[in-house]
Every structure is written in C-alpha cells, then in structure tokens.
Image (cartoon, rainbow, N blue to C red; front, side):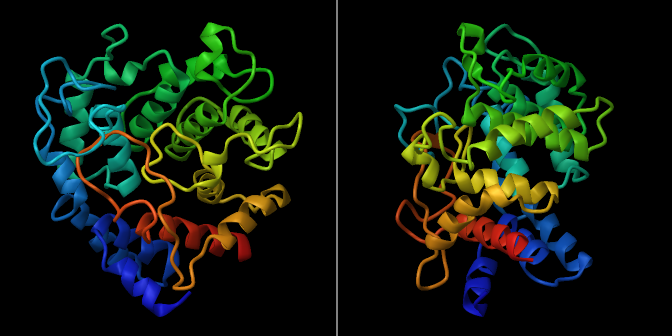
Length: 317
C-alpha cells in the first residue's frame, strides 16, 4: 500500500483514521484507542450526537417526524428517501466505530431506547419493526451498543426463508431471498454473536452467508447473470442497499478465511483501484443526509478506499 494513500486516509475524520490505524497499519492498541475516542469529541460522530433532540434524530425512528424541518445545513436530495432519522443516524455511528463505552454514546443510545418509536406501530426502538432489513440494522445497533435485542433476533430466525436468506417482501408473499435484506440481517446477527448474545445464531448466519456465496455475491443462481448493476458500484453509506464491497467487508469482519467463491467479487474490487491507489465513490444513494462523508460520486472516496484495502489485505494474507 502506497504511503501517500495511507497519509491521505489519515487526513480524514477520526472515524476513518482509527480504522486505518487498526486495519491497515501496525499502530499500537493505545494509539488506536486514542484516535477512536476523538470520534465523539471532534469528528463526524460529535456532529451527529449534537443533532439528537428528545431521544431521536429528525423526530422519527425510520423517517423524519411530522412537522420536522430540516436545517439549512443538510445535503442531498430532499425529495428522495431521507437518511437523517434515528435508524440511519445510529447506523452511521456504528459504521464510524463510536465506542459503546463513551458516555456521550451511552446517553444517546439510551435516549433512543426510551423515546424513539417506530412509525409502523409505535413500538419501542429496540423492540424492532416488521421489516427484516430494518430489524437487521436495529440488531446491529442494539447488540453493539449494549441494548437488549433478543426479541428481534428471535423474529429474524423465524423469518429466514428456505433458500437461506431474508426478504422484506416475504410478508407480501415473496419466497425468494433478497441480497439487500440478507446483508442487513447478516450484519445484525454477526454483531449480536460478537457481543455474546444468548441466542445461538450460527446456523442462520451460515445459511445466509451461503445464500450469498452460492451466487458469488452478485449473480443469479438460475441464470448466472448479474442481479443488479448497482451491486457492482461501491457506495457509502450503504443504508439498506447491497453492493459487493459491503458484502466482502462483512465476510472480512467475521474473521473467517476467504471462501474461494469470493474470487470474482475480489477481482472486481481489485480492478476498481485507480492509478493513484484510491477507490472512487461510485454510487451515492439518493436522499437527504446530515452532511457529506465523501467528496462526491466519481471522486476518490476515503470510505471505499479504506474498506477495499482492508478487504484485499484480508484476502491476500
């Protein structure tokens, strides 16, 4: 890895820097921890925490509340799905790696547990919703930040489809899993397992991962065609959307040895490295955001570069 790329990554926000130190360098545990602590002091994490009001962000759990007025500082398409409510904001804090032991994080997460209510039926935030893609994200947040989510996990295990994955459209009759939903649930179950959850989710995790692996992370099992061209375009933040870099980073995060069936997806990511050693932001899911996390589509992306480099480091070890 070129030193100038490392230096460029380390010029980013603490949410980037601490993960670069942890995943791409031989930095000491103390240096990594010190940089991680800055997320809630001076970085994007601090900005997000400052935006919480009465236990929620934008006055809602999954969507902004009625009567909420976005500040002038928000960016993105205000007519598309908004990414500023409690669920997408807490997902960002998780992606940033905000320390669960940080007092500001503990206070904010507990406030969401006490105050946030799902638009669907008014249930408490960590009691979950009805869509497994939402519930997967909620499990990941709750497990990582010390909230009880056994009820949601039990529901997700019950909702797994015969082909091994999950689909938010199952309640409408779909019997086939969705890449989008499955990756959201897998991330949640992995965070739950890593946190020492009391329910054994091993079989469900393995089945969901096998669903993706059988398809090489991107192809239809029936025809071999690429499922969706957007799967080939690494995006950040991913929200509920699937792409191959997100999936590869999940497999890396679990610590498992790289499966041979990841080869095509890994080659795709290798091929996307620019001459300067970076990866571009190739997609940005339309919608209102609190603030920009990269310089825009078609520009070098610290998030994609960080994730691509650590995935390839894992695969080539």
